[in-house]
Length: 396
Image (cartoon, rainbow, N blue to C red):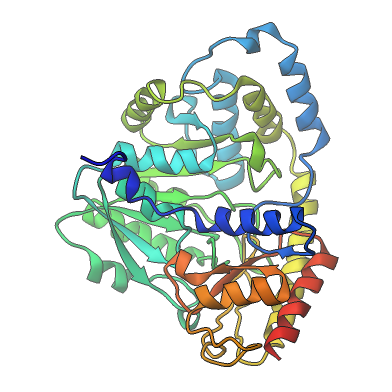
């Protein structure tokens, strides 16, 4: 009998957090490290949101337990914000406030999956998705996509992967790590396929406000209203409002699913911290002026990073359409000699880049896409250019 349960022992560490931690440890030791690992905006949380938290912290009512599903005014505001931003009409009773978007993902799969249920998971995928699925007893069924297909999965691929055990499709647009944004026609086609076959969709909309150029976010249950009764939307304030550390997310779904997920949360975490909830209320109920400013900066940085990466011999990179990541291919770099090293995988290459160039990137193996790497452009322009220039010099 082991000291650690097999279920928990099987969890892979978060590669993105591990890379970020290693970069910060080197920085703390005095090294000049540029970190492209963490997926969080470098902007401060807008001041009106911080002020709302200060007021809440002084309110004795916020020093007590509150409903496990979330503060009623926040749940109402999330429903209103969802209709405003995506056109998806929902109610406060269909909202569960969670401890960040990651917790919403976990709760969604815990609520939907029984042992052995299959969840279709297109790759590249965010590192947490397969772990959350497996912890719920589900089986991740990975479908590969590539830069040649724009990192978008097709209905034909989904149909080929469907079995009698298929319970859920995980859908993400804008996508982490690829930066891909699905056109409305493809979103609708996938939604109609799910309705036809009675398959649940968990759609992660955390990057809804971060799209660039002609690319635009569309919500699957809005395009396919018949999907609403078999769809869970997960979202949060982290990326849109530069609030990664506040830990407020939510899931939206049919009332019976939300009731079950609320019951789970009541026995696991109880309510999300009230001060953070009040801050989130100020965020989602406010205008999008600060969001537009951040989006403009991210778009500029994405173009800059894409251009610099594309100059590196052997590196190819799609221009990001959304989120704040570039996801270049280093396949033609692997096997080359680099300062006495000959990396065969992007896992090994990332180690060489960190040790030799003092730049932290996340290898594609973490996202189910060997040969690629993820670089976040959610950092200042000067550091961004310095970091990619170092990679250019290393791989020249």
